[in-house]
Image (cartoon, rainbow, N blue to C red; front, side, top):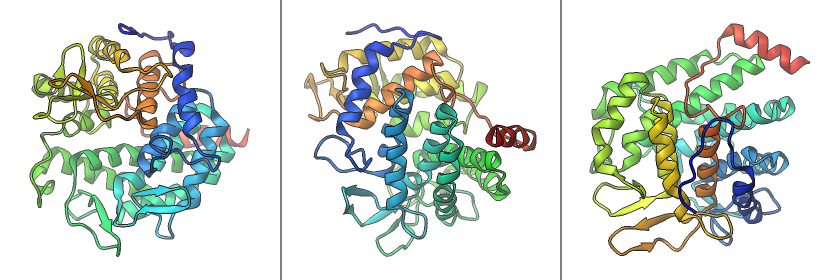
Length: 358
């Protein structure tokens, strides 16, 4: 199918139900959601898939996913880079944006489920995770991308990773406000991180070749609210022709003739965040040609070789498809999470606390 044009109030629930079922079928009894059956699980993509389950109304399955993640958290608040069931798949590093993303997922699930018990249960997990992440923030504002197996910081920062953390800090703050917890320094750290992303490019990619050739470095600062309004629109316009293949999707890397479906979905939400609804609808409409018969979606398409590559249909790509559809149609109470910046204040705290008590 191609040409699926979505707008507010028109969430294609029947069409996307197989996509939700695909994630459910891949989820293990423990709650773990691997990339695909037989694959490994990393904390970031696990959360992305869990958000897809929440959008699909599978709240119990989504909660199990977060409970599995909680059970794997290390004492310092972090997670290893990947797992296979009860085994650690990659003990070489722990990535800061992977660790922070639990806050985004937990807040997303709460917005949809309104499950106060879930939010309370997950608070210690979020609190420890953010504590670990902020321990890697430098005096300049950027946050180191990872620590090695021994816990030593890797000594560099990523634009995409730090942008993702920027949104996670917004969500973590909102969780704290809702629960009446005092974590004012989280907002201060977020402000320093945003300033580094906007004004200190020299603090990123210090020890390797610039990652600016990747599309996520281009649109993630818009997707996560680092840039808003006219600045966001200008950023997307500046490199549109470098990354976007008309009728196909968004390239993962500028020099590679390869469009990827998850990045294209994230670009859809970045366009919505920048106020470009028409182009967001158009880009999403291209993506249904990469849908498999079971409702899953291929990772990407290689333009020159004219082939689907790699031979994988990840759960997190399905999650991204659901997130973008939700953002376009405003189907759930979490639909605006990646399209708007919403930082709760003390007045919101009083209101949210009343909701929790009731």
